[in-house]
Image (cartoon, rainbow, N blue to C red):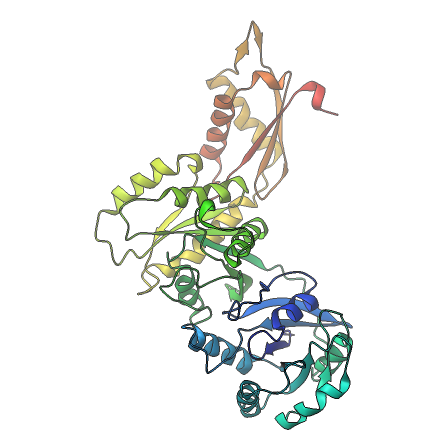
Length: 437
């Protein structure tokens, strides 16, 4: 059974993202007193009394706002309203009914979707402060204090009462694909192109995407989710306590939690920036399989071979990379991205038999003897693979100190010659006799 979708809507600063994070049990949406922090639809799994559902946080609706993103926020919120099974309409009990609340209520009345009207910020649970909200014509308002965790159970009981039946838990693994890169390289445009609709807000303004936006979808009968992330700028240009600072932290977390990463570069530029290969380095250090996506290739008419040579030079630390040249604007070659991402993930998940590994190792030793130091030669005994994602290999030797970086790289190259590990880093651990136990 498909999980029911519950959308949280309301004007800015009524506590939607705080409520969203409270129900999900972790900080997913960025919370800040600045209006308009949430712009896209933020999805997360939630559960209440055995009912599993998808909770959606939306941007604050304010028709009178001069925020250039307000039309995009309204569009994203409207999509959430249209696809929802239940809507939580959050209002502010301290300020009372506003004209903005009335505008939102009129939109919800047209949706014909069940609406749970919730009056937040009643820290002393002043139920009498809910009465004026009957004027919105959306039924009985429920009191809530997210900060005090009061009334949450009643709200969720009301929400799940609209579900047709209990949503079954699914054991299908969702493969998470994080999309990372500098600001304005086209990450959100790429998500929208791949999904086939305007799923995330796109703008030429730097910093449009602030949260890491979770976008579930199916491909080849398997469950996936894109995680569109905020553009990573140079560290010195970002204040850690700012909204952008929180966005950067979310992006790094998205890399850590991803199964595979799309690293997006701007193909209209002559060369990679320092920040481009720093971002690639973060993905490499995290041990994540990846695909280099060179976007905006419709703008650039130069030789692809020259650009590829530049990638080989600048990304010499990740010789395994897969690359593709696309245009999110026209859709050129974007249809191949998922195939490459799937290949990279499958290569990262490979488990090689101990017998084959030791055959490869034996041939490697015959071609190039292990190093020696002060008359003591390294003796390699055998190799095993204890884990995947990334593929990790342990080589047992008489003395680990005798195996230098060059010989590790040599062994890695031999493994890659015999086994397709394209798109994924591999990890080699050398363990001496004294380390076996």
